[in-house]
Image 1 (cartoon, rainbow, N blue to C red):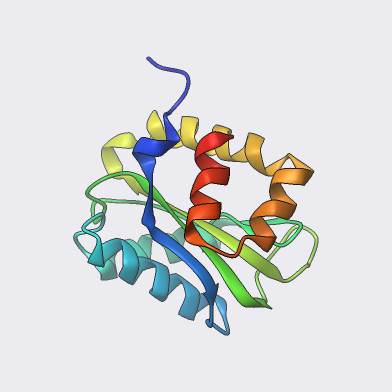
Image 2 (cartoon, rainbow, N blue to C red; image 1 turned 90 degrees about the vertical axis):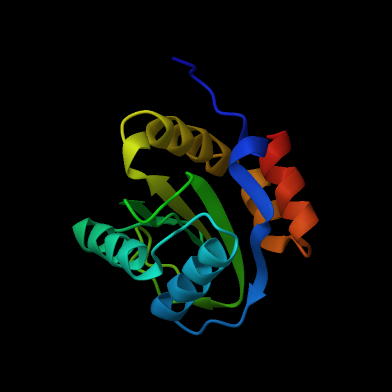
Length: 154
């Protein structure tokens, strides 16, 4: 089994939102799930959104420093991927440091990838997010291209 995932194969530019106008967590999650559905990564929006909400109830996905990493493992996901959003105005999110969230990375995980791809992907993203410089660049990115380059070149 590979121990690293090629992020260029996982993340797509059309799944990146810059300066979302969402005013709360629910609106943002709906916006992100819509984008995943529109781009054919999710076959069943309602099922996937339900699975994301179920995971949210299990524990905080706000990891601190203005970042949240919600995820859903679901039969409604066709292909495991990431959607990324930056917010025009930070929003409330249950977070380890009680800070509002400015960047959200939504993991859409195909149910058959739960034990493999999902874990590797989570590890890789965690390593990226532990890098202060990367975090700052991510929060201040102005274009989808900038975020795409940041993530795929890390």
